[in-house]
Image 1 (cartoon, helix red, strand yellow):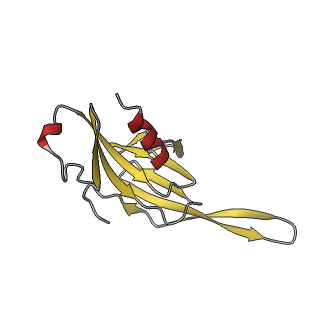
Image 2 (cartoon, helix red, strand yellow):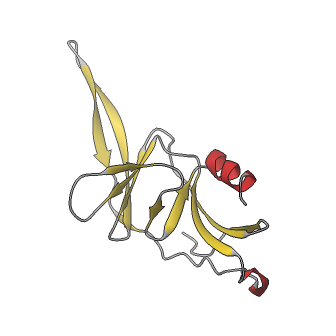
Image 3 (cartoon, helix red, strand yellow):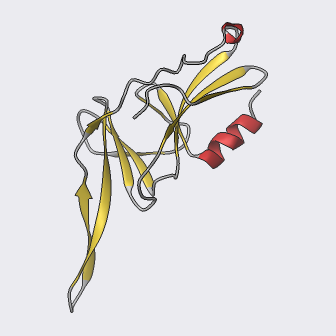
Length: 132
């Protein structure tokens, strides 16, 4: 997993530093833990003659790298607002944050986890178009 920022997008007042985060399957849940780890929850269907249900399977937790959002950064952007974006694509069925204590919390595009704004591509493009 590369740690370098993948691209920067400059608007009039902001610089979006973007790191791509690929999901293996769209029909899964990405869980970002506050300790800097993440895991992916997939589901398998269990079917019997009387009923069926989905059973969750969690991947092994992995350490989320500390991304270098300054890679490729230009000094002339210092006066602009900097936004560090983790772009999840394809977007998972759901993204959640898991605090140290308590249950999982569903997050949406634009929410901040571990110092990064979490985005799907459609929402990021919308925010860039509406940037001041």
